[in-house]
Image 1 (cartoon, rainbow, N blue to C red):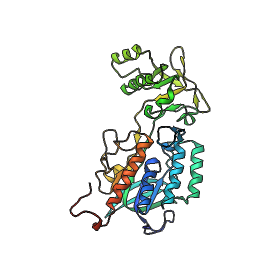
Image 2 (cartoon, rainbow, N blue to C red):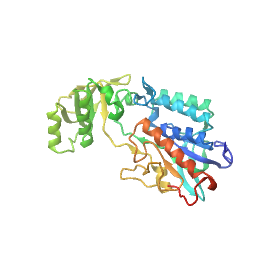
Image 3 (cartoon, helix red, strand yellow):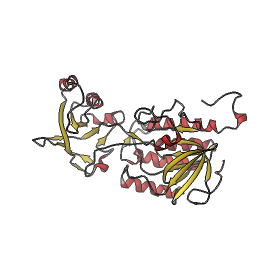
Image 4 (tube, rainbow, N blue to C red):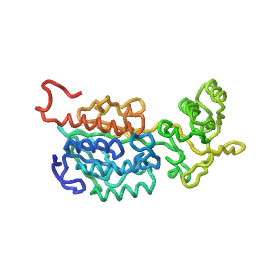
Length: 357
């Protein structure tokens, strides 16, 4: 296996040089790490424990797990699997990135980026324990890491409604993806919170699973759709409330009702809630590296996960082609690893006059 040149991260002496640095330790980043390790590349996974994979959702549509598997467990297994093939782990937040000649320089600060507060305390604690077992190093102060290639698996932030106990509800009774969790709504009372066309479509789509669907605009400003779309809801038996959701009574991660800020303080009993929002891509490093973004800030990639910057690849929720499922993230991480590995080939390994896509 190729070894990184220079001091290990956390030493604070000299910059280490890796074949690949992967920014983000969720399913996409760990899939890339497993495959690059099997290609015998020196690699470092930098993560700040502030990603979706630390929530409480159970992934039930991932092949090979007939009873489902918690996303946090996939993360733990993925970390162990990547470590088996030589991956190293650095806890810290990458705050800057730039090209340094033929390499890329990444600036890493100590601590985590948990200002977004993704994940539950229990899942974070377990991840810390596994990290210690795998030799994870914490960045001490400001570190500099050099890499021949970079894979951005930085993920997204979800602007969930904040209320007492909200973090315990995410993945248990508060959801964002009907593709992932629609099946679990069968015959349940489901509340949709959102005011745009995407929210209307989600409410109507949920009728494939349950007839007990209610929608609330969430912001108190009504719905930003034509009256004809509200008529579609009514025609399909879905009651639409224009009032703001004032509170989400919950216990042990289970939302019990939506309480509206209207004259009657209307209480809508629910078993599950889907919030409709646009995830915010964590694209700060992509911007610094000159990577192309789409209109909503996601990283533009091709089907092999190349960005427009030679030597920089992206995978997972932060990309333009991702559909925000674990299975897709794992696939993209694999593709990014293959593309980065090809970039690292010696000249004799590549066909004459063949350029990297």
